[in-house]
Image 1: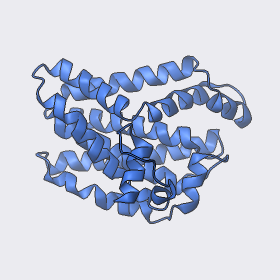
Image 2 (image 1 turned 30 degrees about the horizontal axis):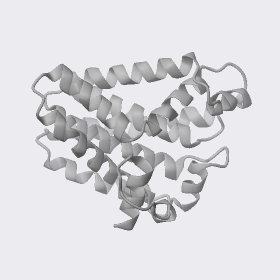
Image 3 (image 1 turned 90 degrees about the vertical axis):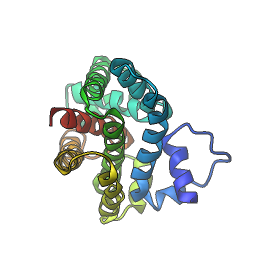
Length: 236
């Protein structure tokens, strides 16, 4: 349980007592999806009692962002600035690392949040969709942690040094319990495809524009993958 507790201390603001050694999680980064289950289920509790779909979707969006301490959302804002920056890799990296949020970051945050809210609002089963989206988001982080070559020293490079090429396959196994949800196999297949394509696309874009991956890109993958998986489920 210690690696799981270390994971939850890293991915959430849950009061889990004394801070554990981060290495406990770093050596087992394939367990990322477990955090997805925990966060989604905790957010699902208040959402379950809200009958208005618009308000329920809004509470769900606020819940997943706030429960994670907006940690990954911050990565999305930074990635937005990096993508919008003009110039060579070095200038894009500087924009990515700049602590100030520019127009690119604001746009990225607004667009992804809007898609997330719209997808949840249109979902046939909001809670099931929320759980699938959050678990898929954490798989995306495990994928990039293993395969994203770091371009600088930081949290991502530290996790990456412990990650093994087979870690994402173990993460995929942790997604299997999603079949127990009242969702059709077709919808689960759609979610799985988007869940894999999102981090793959981000990996390609990041390597081309930044020369690799950092913690901001991994955090952004969480937000983008969650939103796109939920939108895909709504459209399907």
